[in-house]
Image (cartoon, rainbow, N blue to C red; front, side, top):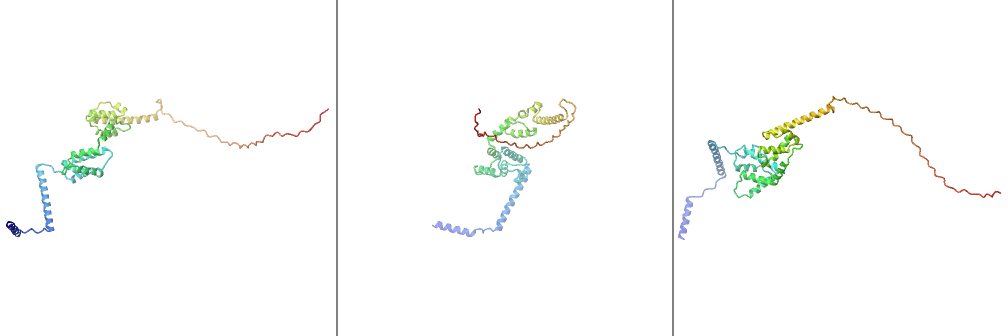
Length: 293
């Protein structure tokens, strides 16, 4: 009990010697926050200057990324559109200096609607504090929006692609779009040329042959040959109009005369025939005649 009473007296004396600080006013709190923000800004400037002195490029901010006008993504029925958006995001990142985590943050900020809901669900399944790098985001995005069944369908479309009524330019565009789903069939220039020639029209393929330095030369020659065939077809059509069937001189147009129509005479109206009833057999009265002597 004596020790407890002494401890209480000592703590009371210490409290009297060191009184509690008075609560801060609102002005003092705002002044401290302003001081902290100023210190953070100075540290950031010093860090940027240090990176410039060391020759290290400065990482981009979201305002820098937004300056490249990146598109948004919500949903799509065509896997080509989802793949195009993913490739466009990667092309935007090539213009900036970004970390792998920044790429994920920038790209996920462009998701809208169902795509944004999918991303929130994906983040909820991750452990706390996990930062998703770009490679992980890219794989998860493709697995959800570009399923393997759609890849197989596009692969079959590429293998069965035919030029048909399309021009060479239109055929090249469709060929390049579907070739992304068949990397094993276009991994060399020779395979790419073989697949392209396989789908061309027989008439154009027979005229082109198979001697080309690369795929680009094949496309250029095909476009030039198609134009030559088109002009030849037009000239041939004009020749059929101006030249006779046996190559003779142009024939004069024949004049045809129409005979005047014959006058139309109205036949006189026929009187209806009166049909009299057939006489009936009327028995006449018989008179007695005496016999003659």
